[in-house]
View 1: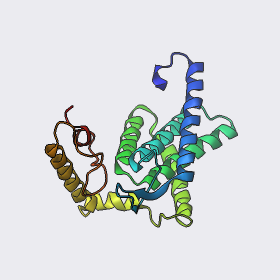
View 2: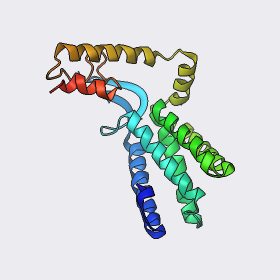
View 3: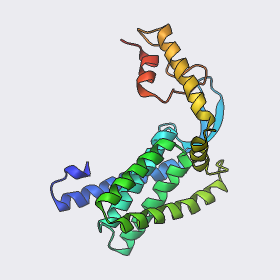
View 4: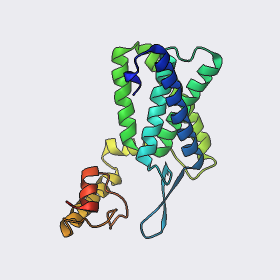
Length: 219
């Protein structure tokens, strides 16, 4: 990663390369992503969470969080001294946060929150807070604009977080049922596995070890 680079010049080059890669991937995901997913039986379901054929909502959320972190890091550490560089940094903050909001996955939100909390310990608190507030503010405006022209009719990430806090999130019970179904599929064919997705829900069970046992078995 960037922390393994030995010289300041190499670090700067690695930073800009990483920013370009993450920025391009985020822009493509926002441009071509969709809230519709295709189940194993060929039916199309609108889940209201942005994803692509290559990135599920969780991966898309982590992509947005990574761009947000890298852009903020560059702004705080002086990698954006010119007006153009600052504009690119702010755009990275906004694009990363917009993708994080559109993907509506709680895991990347929690991961970003942990990174920000740790950063506030090692860096100047007001710098981290300023960059975070700037990115979220611009991202919310962009997300509101996106909802007027896409299938995303609400900021579902906020609704999901509130539902989780209140204990009313139906996804939690559905995921528990998915866990049980995946485990039963593994037990039905423990050596070779059964299927790539949990059969009742048509989705993966959101648990990598369980998914591996379900799909491939012990062999």
